[in-house]
Image 1: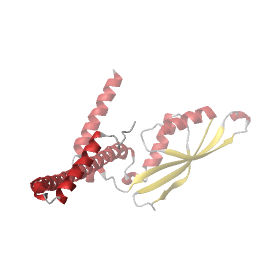
Image 2: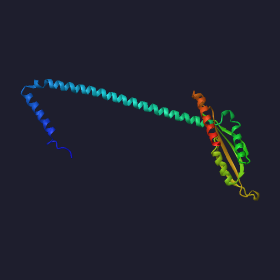
Image 3: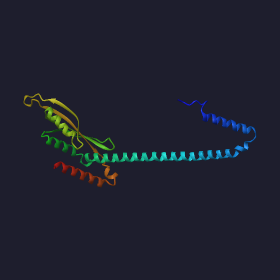
Image 4: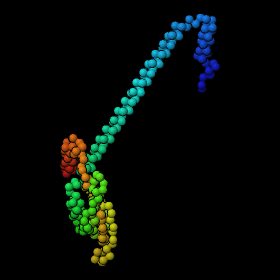
Length: 224
C-alpha cells in the first residue's frame, strides 16, 4: 500500500525544515545558511559534473561495445561466407572445360546406371549472367518408373553440380517394351566465369590442403 504523504514523518520533517528556513530568512538571519548553502551548491555542482562525466563514459562504453559487437558479427558473417565458398566452389566445373564437361558427366552417370543415353542436339549456353555461364543439354533414354526414380536420386545426391531441370515421360506402347517409358531429360550445369577463392584468400592453399587431408582421413576411416 502506498504511503500517505500527509502522515509520512519524513515529509512532515522536510516541511518543517523549510518553514524554519523561511522564518530565519524573514528574520534577517540568512547568514546562518550561507556556508551551508554554498556547501550544498558545491556538492550539487560536483555531483552534476561527475554524473555528466559518468553518463558520457557510459555512452562511450556502450558505443564501443556496440562497435565491437558489429565487428564480431561482420567477422562471423565473413568467415561463414568464406567457408561456404570453399565448400561449394570445387563442385562447379571450370570454365575451360565447358565444351566437354557436361556431356562427359552425362555419359558417366548413364554408364554407372547401365543405361543408354541418346544426346538430342548440341549443348546450349547462356552467358548473360556476369558471373557464370549456364549450359544445358537434351538427352533421351528408356527405362521404367522405378529405375528412373533411382536415376534421378543418384544425380541429385551427386557431389558434382549436375541437375535435371526438366523431363517428360511417354509410355512405350509397343508389346516388346511393356512397362518401359521413353524419357526426355534436360541436364543443366553452371560454369563460373572465374573461380575467385584462390585470388581472394592468401591462405587458399593451406585451407585446401587441410580440407583434402580431412577428406582422405574420413575416407580411410570409412574403409576400415
